Image 1 (cartoon, helix red, strand yellow):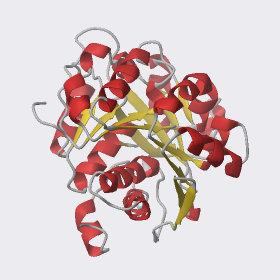
Image 2: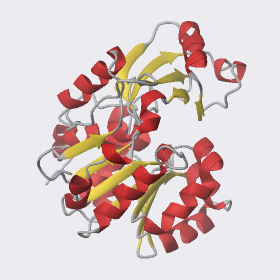
Image 3: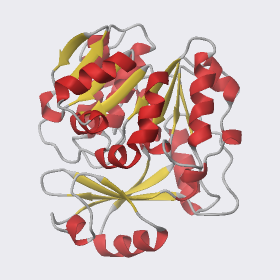
Image 4: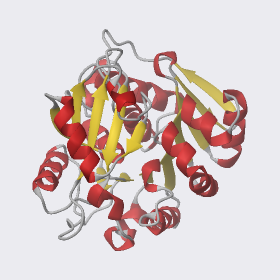
Length: 329
């Protein structure tokens, strides 16, 4: 990468396998419906054989956000790790074709490219079984500090936090983006992950300028009800964004709570990626001079597009949708 980017996202490079399944399949494998569970390679292969026909597409939380930003016309780069295998080639092709810069060299040894099996129940809830693979080994040498220094925002998915292999990677990126006044953004990612890595996430919060989480994640982070959670997190982070599904979202800036309505959707097909795309819209707005409420509106629009179909990445131009809705400047 040889030029500055508005937004750099950092996370696991994952290939998603999405399949409609019965409501009892997650519990059959010891997983809680609607959450993410880490699995090993053998478990991934066994579950892959059981879920039946599926759609395979490149994914990963931070990568999805980078793609959403590019679809809005923003300048984005992704830093994540794949292996030099077939899935790694698929991931690399897909993200570059989406307009996102991706130049982290693939691993030549070790685990294969990460895989996420997304089980979609009849009510559109998704349960994720994730094999992190090579993505768990994104090292400090893989992070271009100069790019992070020049970026307006560096956004990290919470799944990168609390892991020995990526702990210093996250710290390096966060410190670099602050050197020239850039913002450090973090997504809490998943209630399961918050419960598992609360200490590591909590230790990072005082360095976070923009925090994203859904209602379950922020309350899990603080162990309180929503109002107290917002107050506590807003005391530590400059901007706190809480997504609430059909109830819309809350944007908290300077102790002021702004309520954002959910963008209407005819049919909710799959909620995979809704938070990732909300973050894409919001961050795009922040780097293009939008007021916080307008950032939230743009995030709501982007999230609405992705939940109307299978897959965690937009199927139409978000910039066109935003222009039609009068939200693009």
